[in-house]
Image 1 (cartoon, rainbow, N blue to C red):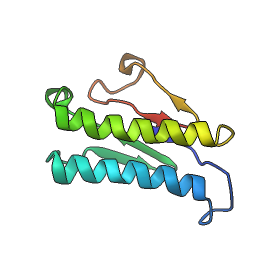
Image 2: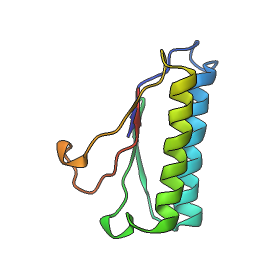
Image 3: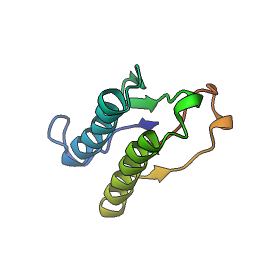
Length: 105
């Protein structure tokens, strides 16, 4: 899950937020167009959650797409530590058992 705003600039001109959004939207595109998952993302204000069905979580294509997004967000967090933080969480701490989390704040 990704949530929050990078606050590295004004809304619409925040390159850090744009970078994070582009990374996560590319992952969504890969999951739908390449891996063939239906509706793998839910959105809210300043929030995006990847909802990977349990049967697809061990597929190599899904792991590669999510792993690449995680590496890219980690690089962004390294470059902009004030604006982006990568947090790895176990899903039992969350309400939905069907969600795999990838996050930044």
